Length: 91
Image 1 (spheres, helix red, strand yellow):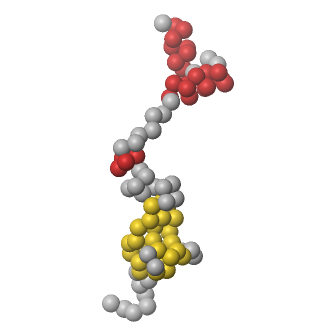
Image 2 (cartoon, helix red, strand yellow):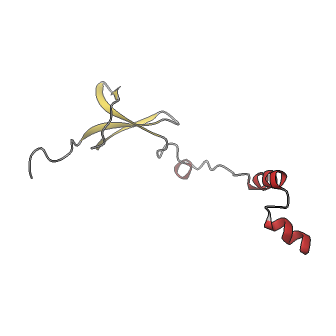
Image 3 (cartoon, one colour):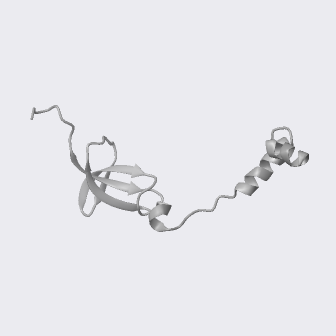
């Protein structure tokens, strides 16, 4: 293996910003921020979703209000842009 051609593979802290969960793993990702975690300084990578906050792993699924979206669309555009309104009027 050649020297000085590989990226720096080191321990970093990943922080889930949605629930403030932190974990240490190894990575080559470049970062400018650092954090003191468990008494030692590590490079910090901020992420939006991890296993601690993802609905698949937590079991907390969000219900999407699709009926509300359709009603907002119909109020905004009326029957002009809606194929379902035209289909309903014919049948």
